[in-house]
Length: 433
Image (cartoon, rainbow, N blue to C red; front, top):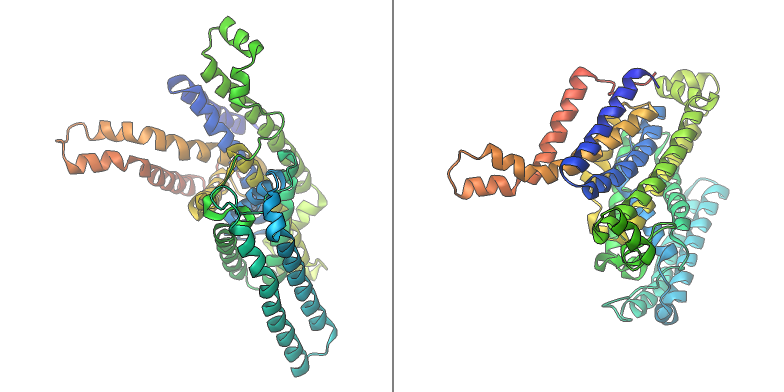
């Protein structure tokens, strides 16, 4: 890393330190955890766009699948739900998968023609109605079981750390399915497919209560090891003695310690992803991916399977996003489908990649940390800044409206930052080498 890049990272570090010094260290650490998670997501998108030129507009959906993995893996099972219809739901899902596999086999093995079309149509229509007959009664039986606090089948009750790779796996499977259909066609088809699938994933999470309680939200998800709970620290004699000895207030100190553990854990994951990304980018595989990005026709003429390589990098990048989505849900301790929106989980990540420098892993990290800080700090500072700007105005509805809407300044701020970077550094703050 050259001197200029070190200076840029140093300036971003000063922003976080200044936030802690002038506002609160709790706020600074909270923003830093979000920045680290955003940097990991940005690395996943950078693999797809920076390495291969794949335009993924469904980042939100892959992050949501990571969050779903935490609910399915680490939440405790609901025995009453399983007894009422859990096994019927599982049988229905297995039957649906079997129908899809049978349809693909018919498509592959039968000769192209009217008979194949009729056979597939009969199988899919008949299979759909049979699936609903198996699935719907079991879902209804599960969702009426103590719907105020459960109404679902729960998870496996396993450690939250195990859910992170499962989140990556779920996102990778979804990416493989999308890629098999869309890749190899025109590039805008991938953008349309990923956007549509992301909305479908969110709709399923919101409406299928048996899966993760839908809009009722899944709360109380366990934290990953070794992150402690603030209450446990406040009840620890050793921690209270340490806080008293150094003059810290126990409640505030416990919150800071928890956030420091999260920062350390997320930094380790980010370092591993950056290391692996750098190894991949500077390997023959990485050089091949960039050659395909720059000229697909020439790469295909040299014997490269362009569609297969696109699918490969699309799956890997989506898995990284899903992994980060699982980490975020573990940190929040709840799965709330309503919080997944394209602005936060798609547009913002794209701004990070563009501002940092697409095609450069360190640029994606810098963009994640910088834009992550801006996104949250502007919301915090907005009312104060607007109060200063409207100081000379007479009290009234306009002044009150401007101050109350100051949180929306972050959209203006991000737009201005993006325009400035595109004007004066169109390849990003840390351009691709």
